[in-house]
Image (cartoon, rainbow, N blue to C red; front, side, top):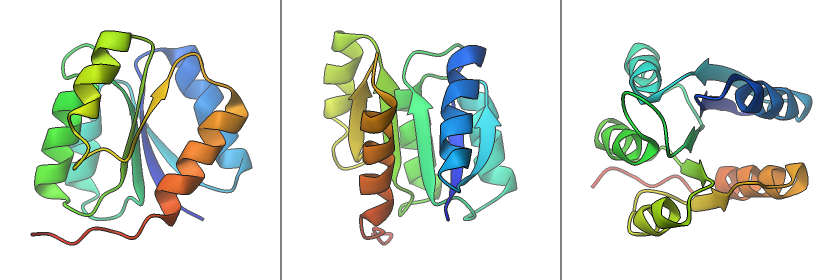
Amino acid sequence: MARILLTEDDDSVRTFIRRALELDGHAVIEACDGLDALAALQHMEFSFDLLVSDIIMPEMDGIALAHAARARHADLPIVLMTGYADRREAAEELRTVVLEVIPKPFTLADFRHAVSRALRQPRRSAA
């Protein structure tokens, strides 16, 4: 299946999502914040099929991570998650970068559908 970079600062949420993705057959690399995720993207260049990230995190938030990821990997699909309505609105301005913003709390079914939709999207080529 897909190789997914999961970025979430809450250990229990990250573990829950990782397990769900692995049950769906995906390989998951975990990052605890945006800087950790950016390091993984730089280390494993072009090897991820999807970036899933929380928006509110220490060090580097998900919006800054989305911009940095897009600058290095123009075709990498990105899905963001947030429990904050104002941050969701800010992320909506990134429509050219982010495929979907999932509101927290979400159901596992909703999350799985969002991931599936993102993975089915044609990869964008670098401009």
